Image (cartoon, rainbow, N blue to C red; front, side):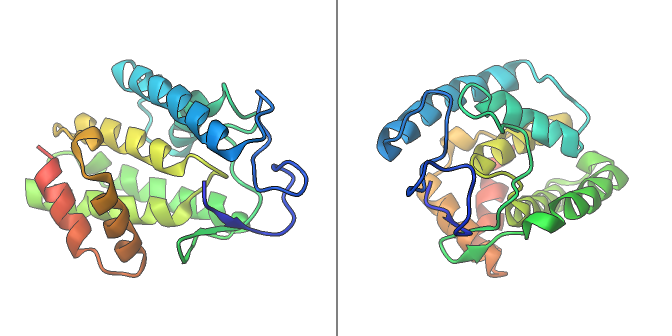
Amino acid sequence: MGYSIDPISANCYPGTTILINKFDIQDEEKLNEIESVLSSARYAEWLSAPQSMAFDFEHYKAIHRFLFSDLYDWAGEVRTVNISKKGTQFAPAENIEHQAELIFKRLKQLNYFKGLSHGEFVEEIVDFYCITNALHPFREGNGRTQRAFLTQLIRNAGYDISFADMDTELLMIATIQSAQGVTDMLKQIFHESIK
């Protein structure tokens, strides 16, 4: 987990930063383990048979709902608290819907990045990755939702990617750098990973 949140959070057990969940797990390590197992299985299931091809914000939220509804009542719902992680402040909760509208409108205007050369495609994917990371619309599970959506988007445009084959530590470092405006490492990672 590891998010810094507003002091008032209705989504956590009293006196903790552990998210209220359907299994009533109040041990952070155990919750992380269960979340990882459940969401990994649902992730594979979604990618083998996507339940949406709209590539809009509703589609993005549907992925989150699909991945996390076994665990959280609020799966697929936009967060209502401000969050940050590893020094990165994400979009203020009250701006999420408006920012998402602009992000997904642009994606549609660019025809979901279809017909671009590999170099142009990588540039657009890196930009989309950065702005959806900055959006961070959910209380938890943003990365997995983003990776599922991106995999589907990339395949829809005639390319392919496997996040499972990426060095996750390197991707994390590149993501943190990109939040500070330095995207060189992220571009390199996507350049090598998008086939």
